Amino acid sequence: MQNAKSEQEVLHLSKDKWRWMSERKLDSLDALFHEKSVFVHMGGSWGKEQEIDIIKSGGIHYKKADIHEVSVNIIDTTAILLNRITLLAVVGGNEVTNPFMVTEVYVQQNDSWLLASLSFTRLLTS
Image (tube, rainbow, N blue to C red; front, top):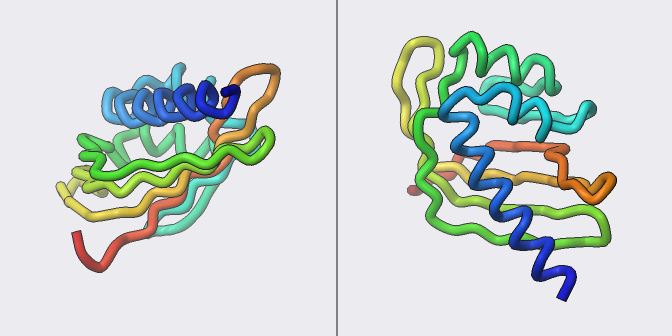
């Protein structure tokens, strides 16, 4: 039963994360992102500080993530969440829409889930 509760917590956090990214809620994202978190995008990979800076500056504005499918697997204190999304974003001043499978890895620390990895894989079909 604990896994079902954890799955719901992680699903809720993931949904909140998309909203916080859209609204540029930097304090919420800073609290959610693990200090050693990594972010993999079409244009490169980097750590927490650069991801926060990119969102803050508008380098990437995650305008809207339409979530089509979501699944989560809990392994001990790690949660792996897969989102099939269509992402509307502004990147370098240009509005773009891409179909992605997004892998989110959360780790549990002190009864809280923290985002350890966020990876975007562009899908060939939407």
